[in-house]
Image 1 (cartoon, rainbow, N blue to C red):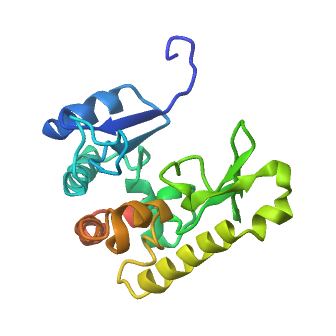
Image 2 (image 1 turned 180 degrees about the vertical axis):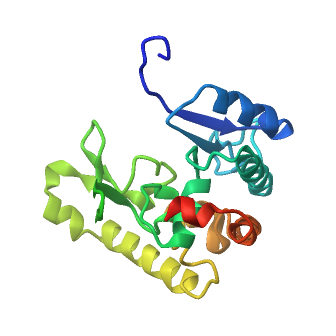
Image 3 (image 1 turned 90 degrees about the vertical axis):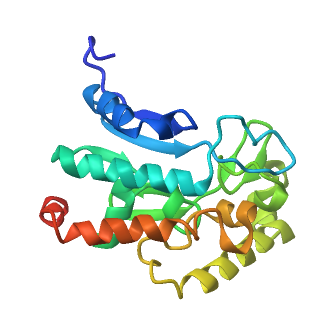
Length: 223
């Protein structure tokens, strides 16, 4: 793709292997000059299905990894390098919009630079879900599009999902980090329970980033 001058991005899955050498991972990916890099954890989640893998990591290990990546990013000095979810968190501190579904509080689809709208997904068999990432139980499944959109939006399943969002928002709105992580992703609370998957560990990352925003000229670069 580089030889044909095709822009590309990277989704890098964080596993037991990569958490051992975050510096090498960072240096290699940056050297490829992608448009952006998205670090996604292979989480060790036991749901009764096949989501518990040998190479999976815990949420605490993922947060440790991101803290190190953020440090490498600062040391690199090129703040134009886009790294998710680091960029998303900084946008949260600055009150800027972003398109990272993991930290928006509810499922939305980016429509324009300054607007977001609630999102529904229709998969090939016609089933309607709140998000293509949600595949853990029927909490995020609302019926089939053949029954009509109004039927789906007035269904018990959809109302149950709205209640799920309300409970999460009521709980999270009291959190110190709410403006950075407005509820996170609803899926995280479905899988991780009332404490979510990252609520316990994420504050370490938020605190680390906040403390460094005053030490480096990042605010000027992002304003």
